[in-house]
Image (cartoon, rainbow, N blue to C red; front, side):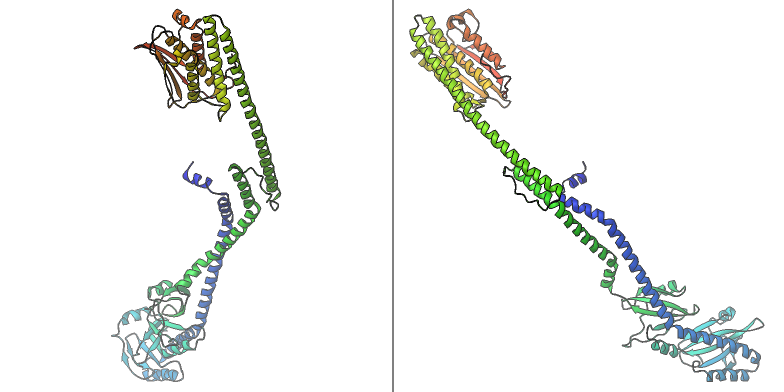
Length: 578
């Protein structure tokens, strides 16, 4: 599982529902963003189109004046062709035109040689030395030139020149001067948009002043004008003061004179808000839809699932009381589930109470069984003791004593079982200590003079191992004591019980060696035990424990060691009383 998958599976139900709802509503949000963005773009396009239309209407008067001037220049050119050799008459015609026009202040004909002899003011002037004169004459096309000071008038003028031809032969230009101040006045009369005029080199020659007398705000980068001079168009640029403005450029007289309109637009903060507006409103709609959908899912599902979760957590923490019914307002499916869970918790709580009562009763009965078995075994031991007193031979008394010791060993096991806190386990170290003390105290005074040492670690065993271990210890200690009391000499008996980290139990019994071993199948052992039954029982109990038994005789000591694994309780392996 990848890190992302683990992260997703670790999310709560609420987080997953929110995530799924967000994903489900996201396409609607994207569609809304797209549609809103389209609407905003269309609105902007309409705004630009409206501004461009207003600029076109505002520039109509300037365009009409220049177009009319060109038409008049062409018409005068056709007239003066007949008088080009009569400068006086030619000048009278042009002077009459200028005097009759309120919009023009000069008119003159410039022939191919550059010597103007026909003019409205009667002044002769040679233009052949003017810059680009030859190129202009070679061009032989309509021209519009802006001069800050006309050579004949000394005033700012816009000169419209129309080519004069006779029978298709270019003869020169008929030029008419329009005072620039007229364009300023026209722009100032405009109520909607003010227009500034630019020549071919993007030089401003007619511009209205603002309300405070400020100059017309040209773009700081004039190259945008050339890029947009392909017809009427709009563009956004910063002016020389750093303000963002919307500009409209309009052809006034071909590509030689252009009109430029300007209006301020929103500041950077407003632009930022406008830029994010297409996203903001759909985002708000998406968030509101997400919240509403989540509240609906939470009210219908999530909060009821959390209640069920609280029921289960409380139950797992030990609260067995059936939860109060708090799901009346839940959907039918969840309400039925909650009711089923409450019923299940109540049923399990009742079953646990019944099982606890049955276990208590079983414990009481089991304690009573162990108590009665112990009493019966002690009764048998008492009867055996009476029989020992009535026995007439030493062999009979010895045999009955061995039986009594075995019975008392069994009684010790049952006594420890019913007195222990747990009925399923017996402390083997306590059991061995009781058996060794019991065996060493029974019999004559020689037994009580034997030095007994015990080193027993705490080991808990189930009854299926405690029983054979107790009987084995009883037989082994009895054999050792009998051997050591048969000879009048100092004797020592040592018993140790250890448990290692691998749950291996080791029992070691060491006694002083005089002549005879503790428990083997030899004839000498049978002399000590009378019938060799003790040796057989020790081997049988060792096999029952699945123990590895090792017998050694070294340095005047007899050592018996058993090693076996501590086992779990199993009814099939438990002793059956045989």
